[in-house]
Length: 198
Length: 99
Image (cartoon, rainbow over all chains, first blue to last red; front, side, top):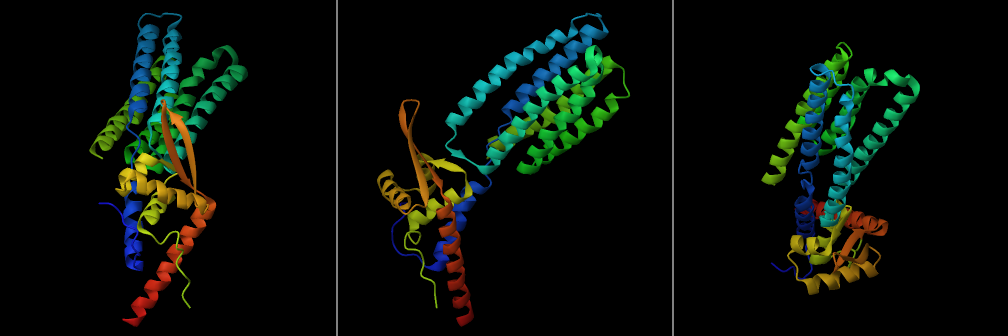
């Protein structure tokens, strides 16, 4: 119905304000696509690395992670496309974007720092540190979106990071696979379901 | 003594636009049109009035070769909106105490 320019009573004004705010309040822009994309990619990479290292003793087992660069390029393309498609930008979406940017910067920085400080044996320590780092964006996104499965996933990552320190190197890789299931894939599918129900 | 309600905000469509924009970072014209059920012509006029009052910023650009208008609320707009809501609450308080 077309809105007229007739004068409003105070009650009508407040009702109008409330109804318009409600139209955007619960708006959910996260469809879980990138959670599922990265969740499956890292799950397969970590399982593949475990198989190559544990069963075949392949020296260059870490090469499977080269796939991440292709994935990163796809992510940049996807985010630019999504950004252009969005008709409305919310404050929560804006803050979540910066949380993930912080995570990406920290990932590269910590990768560099570990390499510099520890030297050739850096890879022996990398998985528990990566797992603890994974928890940060999941936890903050869960808090901002008020989405329990992400918070649960974050706590799982942190628990797995501690567990990984008690395990031999090859089994640490499998902790990463478990973290992908609990922290990224399950919340990712639940996010998608919530988005589609909206 | 009642504070006079801001005449720029005290109109159905302009108030609807401001209420939408106060809740988001920015919104495209088509989104506002869809949520307010307004016609493009009427909405353009009201958006222009809000812009002239300094309550919103309007950015016109090309997106995928089509013209696209984006609106966002300004600091002056937020202040005016808050004062408008306060004034409404005053009116309602007095109305309730008279009953």
